[in-house]
Image (tube, rainbow, N blue to C red; front, side, top):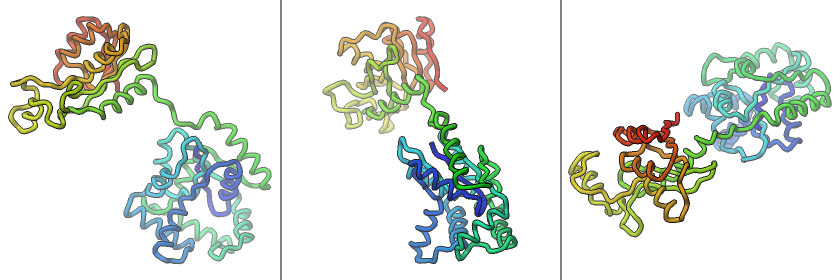
Length: 335
């Protein structure tokens, strides 16, 4: 899970992050990326300098630049806490993930000032007036500037930190326990799972034409794969093995014309041929293909006993799909 922490100065957001870090969360502060920028420029790191460089980066690279950088640090299978979220676009980018939760840590104004005075950093406010002035600077309407008030309003959870650190720890632990099984990236359904694999299979295609991939599945297990290209032992199409494809790409004729035979096999027929080669039955199976089948592949699908075709892109020639319909082979276009 990724827990984002936001809150006003002195609210206890750093304390909440520290408690999560003690629970083996990896701490990623978006301000660290700003500190690195200032270090590279050999500039003094102050609160005002951080605000200025942050606004500059958002202006140049987009308002979500820091969130994009933070995402690159995520370790698969580990929990993370993100702090210094100060722009709505940062939050919107992170909210696209199913494993992200934004938490707003709040505390009474006087309590926040007392904490800041006790902390005694050089740039921290010393009076309520100073505190309010500082916070006003972080409530800009500029889309590339800090907008803490808007970020706070986007939080799904509000964590009230008006007591002891022990009480805050209890709340943080309860927060993690309550969301442990809720915050994780959703798994793809079976259709998209298999289609994603077919998309990977097509990357092996050796045809000069559009790359296509297909996999044959039975009982949710892959029994064969195929991509388009020349037969085994024949020079690859991308190396000049198919005269028709070469001539077409040299501008001799248009796509769809067949003045000479094509040497390449389609992904569906390769998947069926590979199953036959390995002695695997395709009866009552499902074929996932990145394009709807042509008429020749449709004929092979029918005769191979495949009961369903799931495709991603509709091929301009619908003769194949008409043939599947006549043979009562189910066809679905995956959205």
